[in-house]
Length: 212
Image (cartoon, rainbow, N blue to C red; front, side):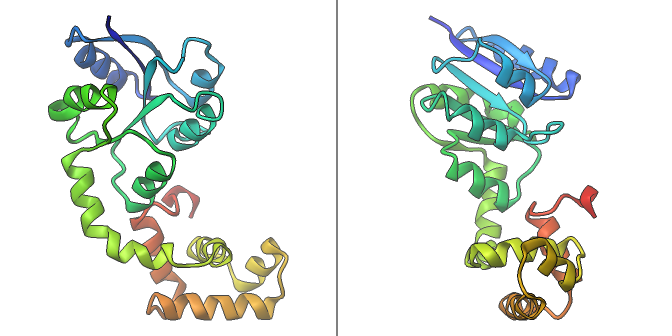
């Protein structure tokens, strides 16, 4: 019996290419495809018998948000991230959501079908480009992971270029407290300016450059 695949990608040409690739293997059938997370969430064709394959970069709600939301009602659904993003932040987030495979689009032509077979068998897979990126970045990204939840909130606001007064107002804390957090964060990252935090945040996918 063929394994049902559901694809989510907002680029029609890319989507059609992956449909053709997947359906070249008789073990799979593309049950449905969607251009947004909202369309996928509104559909009633996705069940725990499917494998959901989604890009991260989607309009409005991203692919990881899609995975998080859909797993609240389909906790056993197998999920695959297929993306150009290889930042540690996305990889770690995907792991926390128990995504079954994280495939770089750079590798997809070579490894996607084999990865889908492994996911169907209950295995967890990272494509070579993703694994290499994770290995290279994991030690540096641990600096961010080691921050407290409050420090992470402040880090992102500072990386987006906001002044300390805005950070304090946004988080409803004293300006003096926000200054202390800023100093501590800069010390932990051995930085002297907010711009250095911005570069780090962009590198690891913590901030979308379009937001700056």
